[in-house]
Length: 203
Image (cartoon, rainbow, N blue to C red; front, side):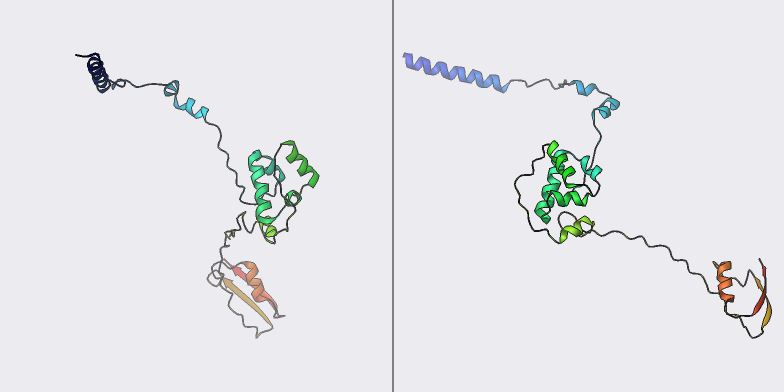
């Protein structure tokens, strides 16, 4: 056997041994699992780890300056840029929509290092007024407010009274008064005759 043949057979033997070892290798125990400290937390401890969930809606107009100041800086920037790109509104227009002075608004933005990028003065869109009034959102979608209809109460009218006699005594019982009629409605029905009336109500 030559040296070359010996080396060749030795390499094959080593590769077979390595292959058998990888085939029979056990990757962890089936009866045990890897645990972490978080696995031992109680439900109360898990709840304390979670912070409060805050929801912001920058698709609708923000007319309250205090609400605007509560926004995270990235949402402030997004809101102002969207107003500029959608409606051509600049910082002064946004400040006016919140009823705050332009210089106050600009100082507040500058102190928080909110970069607004480059953007010159543009023509203000007519939809900007509708956006400020809450008629549309930042994307121009109509906002329909749900109107609550007041319940209608139908009251039967009081029967007409014969005014033939100048003076008459009228007696009205509870059977003569329609359901829902008030004393005011009865008085309204008796007005306009000019006659002297004596009314006796029996309820």
